[in-house]
Amino acid sequence: MLRIAIQTKGRLNEQSTALLHEIGIDIEGAKRKFLSKAANFPIEVLYLRDDDIPQVVENGTATLGIVGLNEVAERGCDVEVVAKLGFGGCRISLAIPKGDEYPGVEYFQGKRIATSYPKILRQFLAENGVQAQIEVITGSVEIAPAAGIADAIFDIVSSGGTLVTNGLKEVERVFESEAVLIANRNLLAEEREVLEELLFRMESERVSRGKKYLLMNIPTAALDEAVKILPAMRSPTVMPLAVEGWCSLHSVVDAADLWDKVRQLKAIGAEGILVLTLDKIIP
Ligand code: PRT
Ligand code: ZN
Image (cartoon, rainbow, N blue to C red):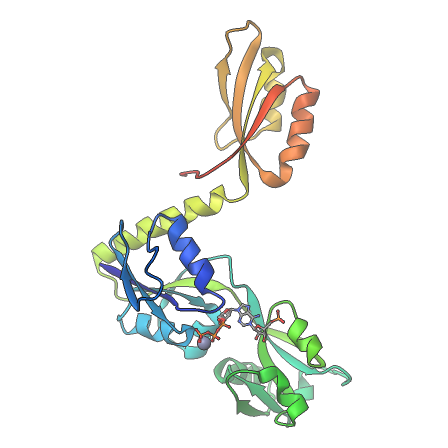
């Protein structure tokens, strides 16, 4: 039985749960429990604060975890980052009062910087030969300069709205983060196998996202043109129609290109175009 740790509540909880659901792991109705078994897969879900997830995966209490890469780096835990998950995107940046002139990293020489990420900050300052005082605070770091606790901050930014509200400006993007799947370093062979199955399902979910299934009737004479417009995984599926000189063409397209493709296909004589929502592509 594999155990995966995810955030109990917070920014990553909803999408972590949604991801498990999308790949067929059903833990519905189990939200309030600390540990829940999946109904249809050899996995159980452990709900934790995000701060604790890297450590429980490192020490083997959980086999896998879903957590921000920022937490993995800050905790300095020795875990394997197995996959980037494409949500929870943010960065950890240095920000200073917006009225201050910014000559470069030397600005921070001798300054006090408030942060919840001292380890990542210490490394950045050392790499840049800057000596500064790090004030560790957990929560509401952005108010530290106005409160007189620090001259600058090193904190998570996504839209940048919080910085603006607090009269600050972002001057150095130090660490790019997103939610990642992490794994314990010493997986047993059968655990590795279950992990491979999870990764396979995630990959199929990723390639299916934003795709549409397209089918239409097309004059057989226009088929070569149509195939050029629709580069499918191998090639589009073509089936003859009962009516002489026509066939039915099926393909998968990116939703972003849909209207452009439809226009081109109509121009070469396609009729009865159906656009269907696609559930999964199994590569
Ligand atoms: O309770 P628990 O300890 O589990 O949760 P938490 O409160 O420590 O973390 P949580 O739920 O706030 O965030 C979990 C993870 O989400 C973080 O570790 C990041 O990997 C990721 N993430 C993505 C973010 C943001 N975006 C984000 N914007 N984490 C925090 N923020 C904060 C940011 O610090 C700022 O104060 O949200 C505020 C709004 O940001 P702006 O720039 O959009 O205004
Ligand atoms: Zn936390």
